[in-house]
Image 1 (cartoon, rainbow, N blue to C red):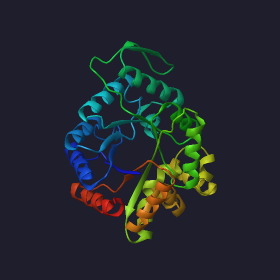
Image 2: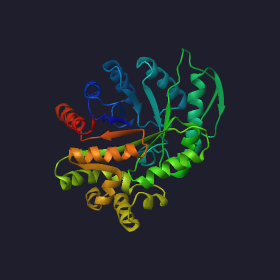
Image 3: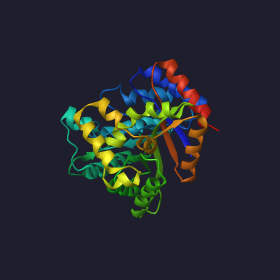
Image 4: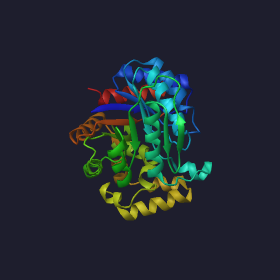
Amino acid sequence: MKISVTVRLDRPLTEAAEIARRAEELGFSGVWVADHYFHRDATGALALMAAATNQVTLGTAVTSPLLRHPALLASTAASLTEVSDGRFILGLGAGGYEFGSELGLPIRRPLGLTRETVNIVRSLANGTTTVEGDTFAVTGAGLRFQASAAPVYLAARGPKMLRLAGEVSDGVITHGLSAAHIRFVTDQLDAAESGRRPQVVLMLDVQVDNDRDRAVDALRGRCLTMAGGSYADELIEIYGLDPDAVARLRAAVRSGDRATATALVTDDMVDAFAIGGSPAHLADRLSELDDLAVDEVILSTDGGDLDSATNNLTELAKAVIR
């Protein structure tokens, strides 16, 4: 199982590239960045990371075609594949909560627009193409340079998006650490009957601390979106959570009272989406995921200044890199 990390782009891009270099030096397999309009630009960060590293894979976890048209994503993916010598992975997702609330971009037909995006990105990498979609279309368009196609991973939680990932993607990026959830993910991927199994990638927050209670407390706020956001109700039981507790948390999240919402994140919710505790506990939990045939985990630690981020990464490497 590959062990990778995220780098938050709430810091200067040169610092992000230095953290990526350090992650490679420590033995991590990949470095992933989220593409948010309110943080620094992901494509610039990844280009600098490509120049600072030699072996780690580099990816978006994730970017949205509602922010970057699929034609631009095709050019971006081909360009980053070029500068990284084939180490780039294009992670795609329909979009986050801020699209509707902050950008006036309600997410309609997420399955359809995701399918269209994958089709356009892959077609443009292969030459001039025409794709007619309900959300996106290109007519006689083509990249005017020699392009190599990057692997495409889809962010997915619900059954329909997971089945789409099984049909059209090279990998799926999802959340949820329970054995029941991982079986659910692989069952949905297999239901696509594509004849191949996309890579199963789990994103999760981690907190290394010998004081287990303190580690769990530190993770509560970082699990708000995963535990209290919008996802299919059928997943609540699969995650191993109490429906009433999830309902209370969702109501608090929608109210905008972050302090109240954070206090409603139970230990079970933290354990469903994150790992907190001693180095031995982290190692044991990751070993369990490896046994469940997870292909890659993307670990997110606390940020802070460059020294703090580097120290956190170093402590994490000591716990999980063998």
